[in-house]
Amino acid sequence: MTTADPALRAIECKLDEGISLSLEDGLTLFRTSDIHTLGRLAKTAKERKSRNEVYYVLNRYINSTNVCYANCTFCSFSRGEKDVDRVRMSADQVVAKALETGTNFNQLHIVGGHDPRQLSLDYWLPLMRRFKEQLPHVQLSLFTAAEIDYMARRHRLSYDEIVAQLAEAGLDNVNGGGAEVFSERFRREVCPNKVDAAHWLEIHETLHRHGVASNATMLYGTIETLEERLEHLIMLRESQRRSPGYNAFIPLAFHPDGNALSHHGWTSGLDDIRMFAVSRLMLDNFDHIKAYWMIQGIKVCQLALEFGADDMDGTHGSTDEEMIYHSAGTRSGQYVDDREFRRLIEEAGYVPVRRNSTYQTFPHDWKPEDGMPERALAGAGAV
Ligand code: SF4
Image (cartoon, rainbow, N blue to C red):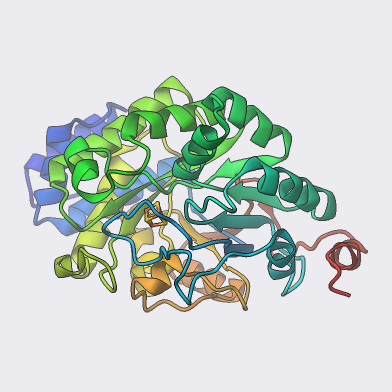
């Protein structure tokens, strides 16, 4: 196989020998003009991990509140108490929304702002137990580490204590948000009121020790340097070594509408593709790299399958109303039919595999057991 950039040959040797790449290797990968070799290396690394498979999940996505006072400058989603477009769902509304389009899904994905009137154990523990009772086939993928840090401080609990309670109530997975970029410089300028990097990592490592899986993200495309992106990836790799339990890494492209960092504009297709490839190659102890169609758009995400990604995330429900990226200008819709996922994955030459949050797999036409939909809907007061 020819390699136009000779600097990539040494990196390929390291990859073949199973040696983790250094920050300098990562810079070479980000800066190479040999995008085809970069793709080939990342695709080979993906196939070592997940062979010819690419994953997706039938899920429901809910933003249960957009009230937040953390004032992150990249955020277009948060609202104050008096804003007319503030959203704060009651527990009954969350259940009704989750069941609005039926019960044939395997993951419930909920994130929200740091809302003092909703983000508490008094609200969430009974709601989680209710979901587990009514929808035992659905994994709960709730919160980010930033939300767990907020709740822990609010209840004056240690991370160990709060995670134990959340795990006992049925938490299966914690979402990867809130990581942004771990650099202190970045966090001081962009999100000074949010959990810092050390505590974000400590929360995820605590979750893993309690048997709760998690994902990790990075927000790219604003003030961060390439070195800071790579330091972030290396910190995640080290965290996975200390306390394994991360399933997927999800690169999140910055969206510029309606926030204080709008002048950075949109990320480019090439930056997106490089980000997927470099993530795959740097994170040698992460099983999955996710190309989330809502973030980079479904066409770029299909292309990302050639650059190391092996997951396209979830369908969402056909009436779901994602607000975080839609407030910031995403041109993606709200929902993708699972047949479309399978078509795109097969066209890329891979086998589509339906999964849940923890990557247990299902036949594409799997359904909950007979009677489950009626029981769950009756429990929600929807029939
Ligand atoms: S990014 Fe999250 S924590 Fe920051 S302001 Fe927005 S909702 Fe709040």
